[in-house]
Length: 302
Image (cartoon, rainbow, N blue to C red):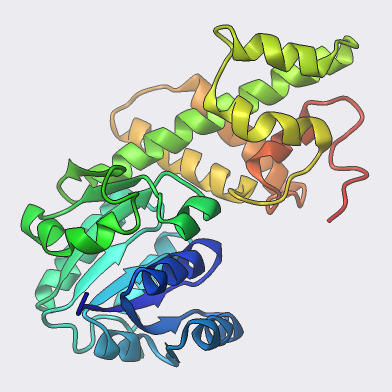
């Protein structure tokens, strides 16, 4: 494991990926975050440098993993004239894990090649616990040879490769990730409506959930979000604001093909409404606050 790994973006996901890679024997050479204290705290924990610039991360690393928030942040770390990852990047590999528009992944690949480097998208369909355990479901987009060169690293993040899948060329994994989150968000909003309506009629919600689990109403989000909707425990694993962003990406893909997606549009409106109400940093399960009578975010502990 001779490759030195840099991590840019050490929030809940990036920090736990860094911990995992350190744990399995990789040298995490540098971490960087716009919140400098977060990078410093993690650097002290795992024994690496808290880089003060993006170019420094590149200089210290063979492979740089990025986990940023959105397209604007992604473009900034690669194109900012004062400081960016592509300064001195020849021969380096960049693995980009953010959920952003496919066109931005394609742009980054072009910029990396121009700088003599390579990039992949590694879209994650998992959450914080999986990042720490190294059991992320990873969807890869980009050049197959580049993928093969860093595959040993990626296997340590994806249950020894059991959850690792190359989708195709740059941009295609991002398209699939947008669809994954679009369907997940529809299911989450639908579950909230079903449980909210059951509550309004005074039904036993535990019994309703049991019936759901054994019928066509079953879904993955019933397992991950059902109890949280009942208990109003919306500790954030995947925020409502991210749900809105990702549904928006999917809708932009639909617009490109002149397709109308009414369910995706409805889910997008619900999560966007949460954000406007100041509930955007709740977990996506918090969409139940919009459907259970008498809630609307009132009485929540924040």
